[in-house]
Image (cartoon, rainbow, N blue to C red; front, side):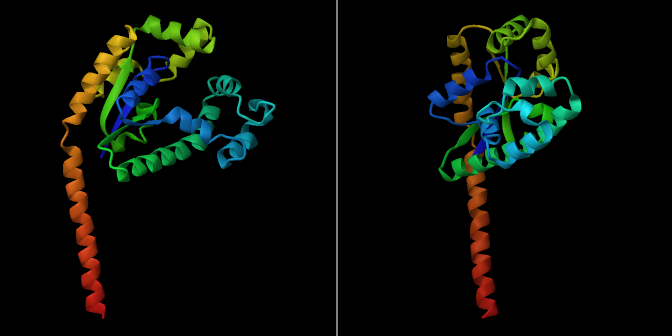
Length: 228
């Protein structure tokens, strides 16, 4: 099995592309969903978040107020780093755990959405291929303002906190332009799916893994017999 990293910028349409992969029967992992789980009330991540940021980032029911937290961290680099230190290791471990379960389930490859794939660099080692989702700059700004009810100034500030899209594109194997309608995005995504299906990486990887496992098994048997 190999892992395909899916990334892009804020409001470029990563979730849309991920849903198209899912509709085509591809196993997917959504970092945003996992990020919510690691901060659910009562978890260790939630406790650390509360201890550092206080009740101001919590809703009355104890759940994290993501809007308030976003305002705090985007105005303070050190607090942003602290949040990343609390959440990123837990998110990464959960994603890798899911990837292992998909491997044993027999999937040829999985698509892992990681919004900050290039920014953190921690997951790049595990990616066999990388897909970046882009759209026109004015579209990205408009979509982010509408989705999050941001002013253009705040939206620009949020976008500027991430690596420029052209740099992500330069380091990607595939690019999906989500500037048009959903049908165009679907055509591009399904074209990539066809390419990924032809990869021999999984077959070669499984052969190497099988040989390695057999070597360990026979080596263990030989050692036991030698000791006895």
